[in-house]
Image (tube, rainbow, N blue to C red; front, side, top):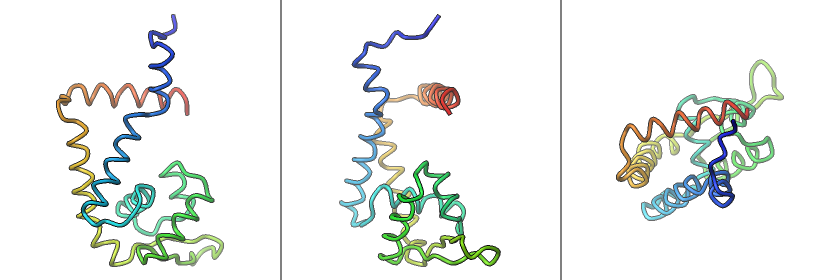
Length: 146
């Protein structure tokens, strides 16, 4: 039996990711108030590079679920503000590896603190158990649709 107990309006809200949009907007607001002059999209690229510096543009596409033109644009803009640099791969010059600059390294702690602050704001009144259930459900939805 299908699990379709959502009303059409609730399902639409679920699909459009209202919570995700609200979190992105709040994080952008918190960045702006703290003088962190990057967009949420740029931060998502930096976030993955902080975890594994020197990723290829294709690896960044896969990690961020963005297409190649979007990643190219984001990397271009991050390069313009001196947060990343492209280096041609030694094995294949057609592949660009993206490395963080020292300026990006100094931005890591401040931006991660702001992200944690935003997450704490978003999860106010939500129990750890509820968070775990939500993560499990969303992971199942993702697995069902990938």
